[in-house]
Image (cartoon, rainbow, N blue to C red; front, top):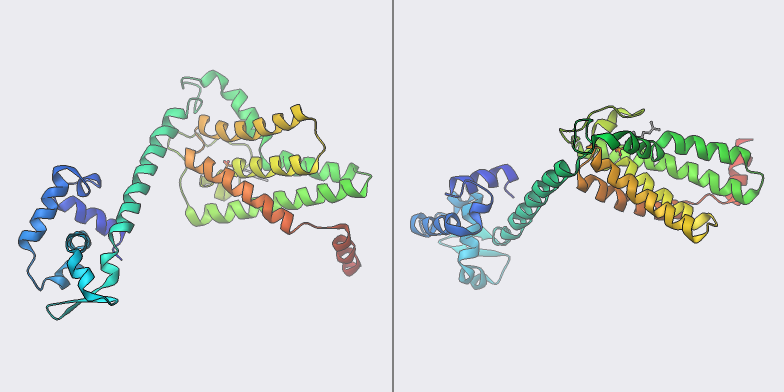
Length: 287
Ligand SMILES: CC(C)=CCC/C(C)=C/COP(=O)(O)O
């Protein structure tokens, strides 16, 4: 498989000079024609050094593909792996991803209206920072620990203990994904956040969004709340997510994935749910 870098440089050299140039318009046609003119009949090995060429040729000659009927195609004594004929799809996925990322960066920059005091909505930045604190890990951990300590019913203690476990699990999982993906925060972000870990210099996914989605599901499932309060919990979660982009902390995709991840994390919490029976046996083992 050609690396995305190799693919891009091949597309650029073909006359397009951009990712879009290889798929449509005049540059796309130019690339296509120049290939059919210049490629020698037994030039398959040379195609290997130019992934775009190989891709276009594979797409250009369906008869060559259909003729083989096996996992490889034979042309002039050379074997063309079936894999070569499938390279069009990954390149389309690459283009789609690049386009999505470009839209993401553009939209996130436009929506970063509270990124600093001088921004268009800079005056509401303090309010956004308040929303930020409401979704931060520390108030949630302290709040859950306090409720656990104060709770006098077994059911209340069970729920609060599981909430604590969920919050720790969230910090660990988000930390792992951030450390693996290592996407930098938007350039317009000011790193003036309240207590962070070292992985929090990375932005994908938004830890506030995962926590908001997971905690909202948790509260809606385990607390008996009146309808207006349930709506408020949902609105809070959504607003925490939006505030990440408004503050310039995150790109839109960081928050969207954060919501998705937090939603899924709740399923994991349910699967790992610590029941009183389990707790008793754990306590017994400790004693
Ligand atoms: C120090 C503790 C307990 C939690 C850190 C919480 C935090 C700062 C998460 C980063 O959130 P974003 O990824 O949304 O910026």
